[in-house]
Image (cartoon, rainbow, N blue to C red; front, side, top):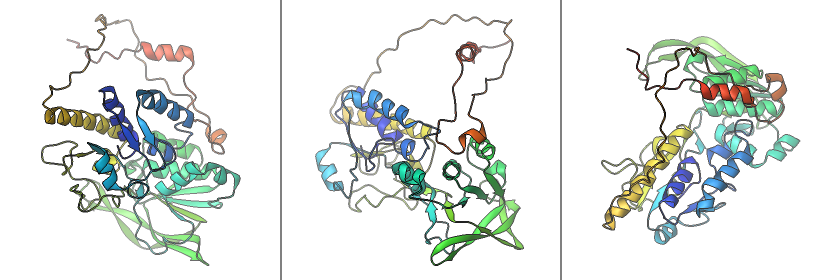
Length: 386
């Protein structure tokens, strides 16, 4: 396995359960991928993530070699020689450039790179050894942009998110957008960056222009178009650009037989869901699809493990794998017509002002009674009413 993110760890676990010896190479100091190096601790506590990986992956005999970047600390050719089959799950850890003047100045960060640096050196950031300054602009409307903005806020900055479309078009989860606004983050909509201003090589502002919605584009949304003479400059100390991510494929040799396309993602063999153009290599997650959800990466890990096992068995002339029988649980088909309909209970959270200067977990969890009531709600989606 190359990559210990959700796709790589899922595939490693599945294959270990099927009896394979699995080794995972991870360039970062700890496993988890985006789970530990992009998603902030106030959303996913680090001790919870570490215990899940230890108890559910490493306990099965999976060896995870951290601080080992393929193509640097160990060559791609060496991995190719030492292992029979390889799963490429390197994710999408490189921010897309904005393409505006001044984005190489000191004080301009990529969203993924900023979150990684913060999570890897939190003490330096929280102690003030590293700083964003007092005013920060975050460009973008996805979950990474929201995460970067909420981290910047907790580091003491006044944060403004600049997004070129309407709020309903923001790809971030609605609850994350609401949480950001509750914490005092301003979202300035229909705004596009034009130029980053600097003095002595250090960011002092960002010049933008207002947008309006024009005709529909290929995505089915109205295309933002610039409003003439609408330029303005926002005074900021740092800019975090989070407009998208791409995989870094520099570790793949051109003569590897593994095809990389113009979008910097892997090509698949014809008819396969995870096998690359080199039958020894499989892939999944963001390295295949581009930036997607954690759930999507986990599903890809399951798919790849199944495909790898099936291919190996076929090559060895072995019968197909049969899933162990699950314990049968008889659930009586009872519909209580006396039950009152009720919405899902709202998850208790720290109040906005109480959480915006610390990294404590935001969601507090249900009290016992509420948890029991939630577990008792009717989820019988197979029920048919005549």
